[in-house]
Image 1: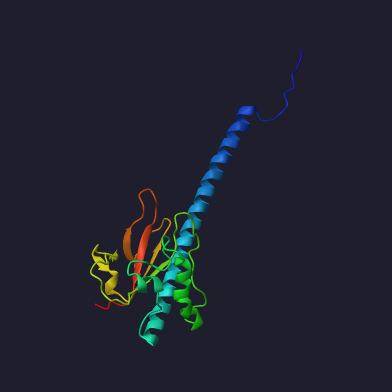
Image 2: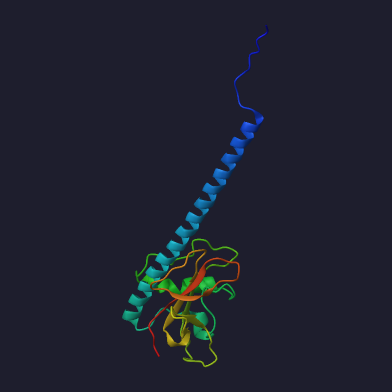
Length: 192
């Protein structure tokens, strides 16, 4: 009688099943890690905007007016920091540099993930010409009412990648269809 000895080991099917399970688990972990990074950047944005708002309010209480965005001062519908305006990011930094110079903040905040979606911070101040009836730039508040920028001393606008926030933020509008996240406004002192 002949006795066959089988070597112990895994079959090809067993190895393929294990590899498939490991691939699935790594995909799930990477997705969760990516979502955590996005939420962390969104949280960082909100923290930076809160700090910027406090600095602008402190500056305004001393000087009687907020730091000036030269783009909105000369053209009432252009934001410092807007992706569509020439030198807008430079002008954003220039407009807020007095906050650093006078030590209200340590540095000018920048979006933690500026990408092709152009999620950048934007800043707006009331034009020299005062109220212009054609100005239709607005933010929506939590009750979906329009708050026109001409009624406020300044506004800060920013976008989130995924998260939705409440509290001190004024909801602005949904971003482009298919893009997650929200755009928000933080409004300065109401002047009208």
